[in-house]
Image (cartoon, rainbow, N blue to C red; front, side):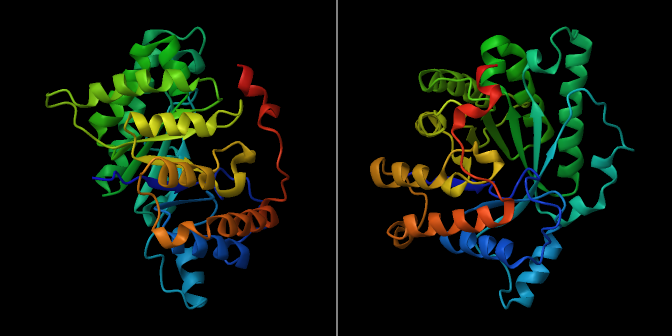
Length: 308
């Protein structure tokens, strides 16, 4: 049976849009409409935009909803901050509008603090659990982005896997392995992902098998290779952007991912009738995204984090 792969588009995510871009912007609505039409499963919104605003403006433009896509928003945990019930994550009522929430947290003990002690690391694990449980109690689908996972695993595999365990215990619906700075090589991906997935299949009351994804940045030009290796290792979701737009042009190009996975490797990503027009669709999305964020495509190695 052909394995299906879900797509998560980040073209508009991470607050790279100018503040003057409003939910009613026709260019933004056009991007949502195109992504939904071709069957992208998740679309990440900028944090200053509420889901109800997007749906309201779509309805005003005679499109009643997004039948194929789920809108989500990313909440990034600061590893140097303690979260309690009075912090914005718990008090921000706008999160309640979304059915899907993405939580991004650092899973590298080295990245958190080069000299941090075990007590601090344990507190970070508890914070991952608390925040995910908070949204699960509201009935949300939670995608957990394990930031710096590959680097963290290579330096301190125990803490990296404990972070995954914390998210699973809290009820996360997806675990996404993130190669945040392009520090991983494709040859390392199967071993690391297989070890993490083995942890999830343990026959205990604590852990359960949940689907996984990959989010590979292209800082060293390996985003596509790492993504393909991760899918071969068993992940079921790919995060990226079309036409290399969004997220400071660092993300894996989803049009390349689709072409390789579906046309060469036999995976099911999009309906067949959209594959023939994928180049045209990708270019259209790229032009729309450029209009919004006013960025130009740059060589991936320009990001200093690639050598960290």
